[in-house]
Length: 155
Image (cartoon, rainbow, N blue to C red):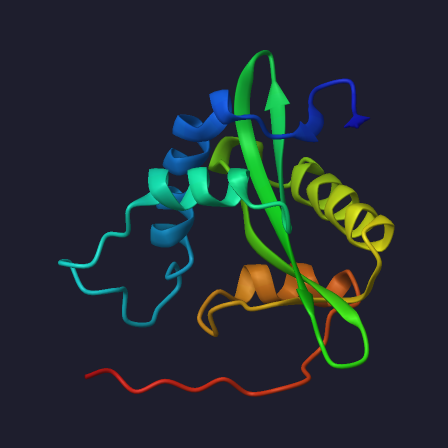
């Protein structure tokens, strides 16, 4: 798909599921960096099942960034039909800490957005945890902006 001298981005395969699941767990912990209330300790999703479901879903595309045979990042898009057009929901964008600030997330997003366009999506949407200022800044630089407010109440 895409490459730099140090890493490449490609569509994920079922062989990638264990490494992607590990990255999803890292994303889950990382998104609370800088403050906020992390998820309850008794709530750890079944990341492997989520990855396998995504890889099997024809409306989903999972991408991985790889360097020297090691997965260093992931991103996925999920297509959804709206009354008048198709959207692509960008999800699970993550880069392992030692590869951040090296263009990996930018390339993952470029590939995901290209796939969204090719799949007929008229817009891409994503959700970022409010406390994850780094991610929000990254997405804003890529042209993403507010269009709704999603709120929660812990029970």
